[in-house]
Amino acid sequence: MVITYYSVLFYLSIINNFNKKTIMKLLKKIILNIFIGLLFFSCTNDDDSNKKEDELIIGTWKLISNIENGEELLAPSDCDLLFIFTTDRVTTQYYEDENCTTQLNDTWSYFIYDDTITINESHDFADLVILELNSSTLKIKEIDDINTSISTYKKQ
Image (cartoon, rainbow, N blue to C red; front, side, top):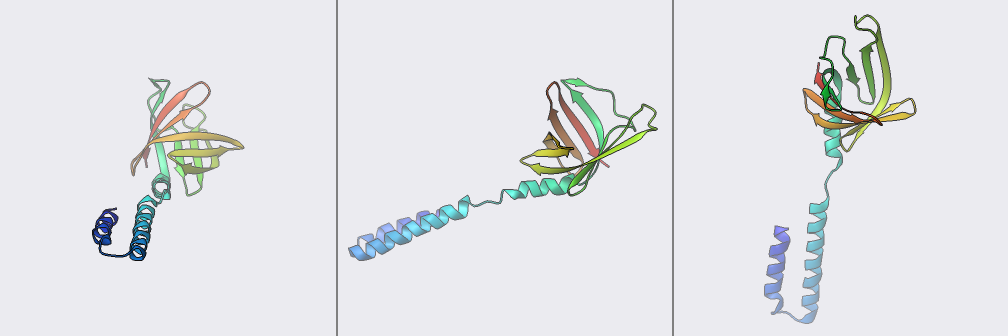
């Protein structure tokens, strides 16, 4: 926009020295410069943030904290939930019992859009809002009909 602003000042300063035909040409150039300036500054790539999230989320994430309706649930253990993200699939790995003997795995497709992970769970969708995502921490919020939970995971 700085270039356009100075261009307008320049064009306006020389308008008095030309005839109507020249003035019209100058006005067209001014409008063209303004249009190009607006076009240049208004174009951004909205996919950059999703691309960064897509790259950061790939890996294995271990549950380290789970708060449901404002209350901290049981302390994390070696048996706790793991999320294993690949480029297009997420596997949840967890244990059915307290002794960590019966391991269960579920795998679903997922996508990320606008800081939300949408997991396709057998024709039902779960939306997880990303509160924090960096190379070591994933913090998500899930709201269902009854509960609101905030879970924090550490990258393995």
